[in-house]
Amino acid sequence: MDIKIDDLTGSEVIELVREHLYGMTLHSPPESIHALNLEELRKPEITFWSVWIGDELAGCGALKELDGQHGEIKSMRTSSAHLRKGVAKQLLQYLVEEAKRRGYRRLSLETGSMDAFEPAKRLYAKFGFQFCKPFSDYIEDPNSVFMTKEI
Image (cartoon, one colour):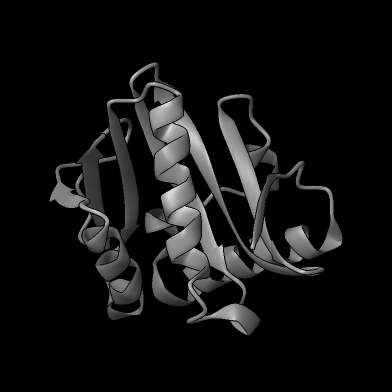
């Protein structure tokens, strides 16, 4: 697997981000969707990575700098053709290591509370993320779950 910083201009990456956004609409009401669109993912405080297996896009993910010591995982998505191949696990490990390199002391995330998000929550828990209160600009929402990890 090759994980590399991506500028969000390639057609495969654009399609995977669209798939990610569409997937959120299937499981969450509009007011509870916190996934970022292409324009938002290009903001300077966000670094976006794509994951490749050979010449196939296998997944993506991003880190948003909340402040100099706190980062947020955004837009974690595995391509449907590469599910259950360890893509999310390897990308999450990469993002945690990158957060450490940046000097973050905490890494947090928001995900859905519905059954469709159970695999993601289990993965995050395996990496030591624990449930927490809303952070940054988030508010309590029955459709959201917040997790954090000291690093």
